[in-house]
Image (cartoon, rainbow, N blue to C red; front, side):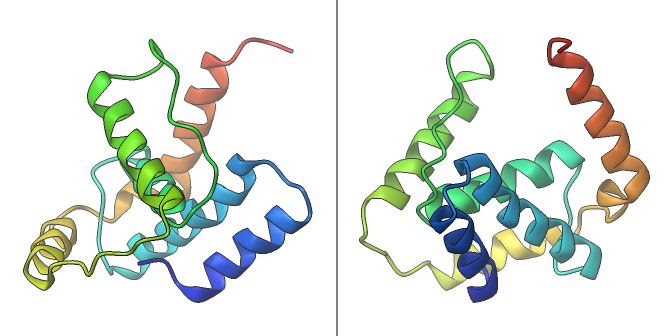
Length: 133
């Protein structure tokens, strides 16, 4: 569950008319902080970003799932589920047992994945994939 401050920051961005990806950036930022604090880990910077985007979609940010051909079908389906969950206002109580299991699994993952070095490497890699302006 995202922190109240993160949701407020995202709402503030939305009120200013900023793009959904900018709003989602707040959730990704929160995710990076959580991993650094040791609340949980991730195997790669990409996974940390994906967790943040998933949280954003579930919190109601209108971030569309990736287009066909950009990612795997599994990723797209997961994003569509998250997007639908965020669009429907209904909240189901998370299973405590499942939540604990996920948290324990993530805690076993490394923390170095969100070091500044790893994030810089990821940023350069994704910038290289974008077309030159």
